[in-house]
Length: 177
Image 1 (tube, one colour):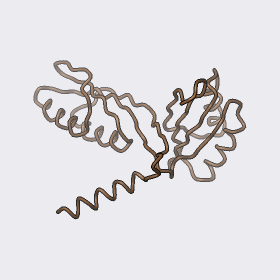
Image 2 (cartoon, one colour):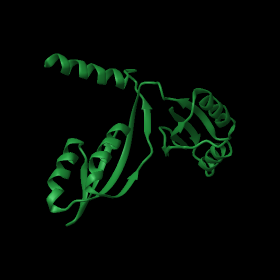
Image 3 (cartoon, one colour):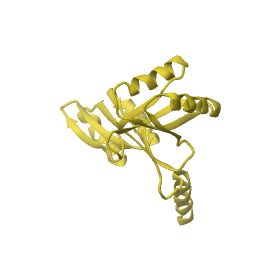
Image 4 (cartoon, rainbow, N blue to C red):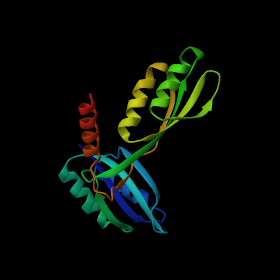
């Protein structure tokens, strides 16, 4: 299973290196990593996705708290939250297939940020499932390059689960047929 950890740290040089070293020494992989300033000056938020089980995450959390500059570690995997990623995708876009590609981009609300006679670059933001879905749909056209951020996540103040919202929307759609 994949776990999402939100780690608040003091914004000082070497913090990320010490965290990465901790994971490397214990043989744990970080699948996704995003780092940036948090709500208070001098504090950064690290959002990471790590594979493992509940025991592994508990062990990693204890080890992270032993590091200097780590202020708070929170497993947000099963907490209702908003998750987003950003992807830039450079794709072959010959005249023959350009309209099809643009239709897919429109459906996913992707923005065209660069265009040439034979390729274009799309900017896509959304939950990780959306990012994977558009990548799969566009791969037959010939992906040239991809650059993705790590997942960022904040706990929902409403405490409403995204899965609950999806299920409610599906139920409403089913009733309207």
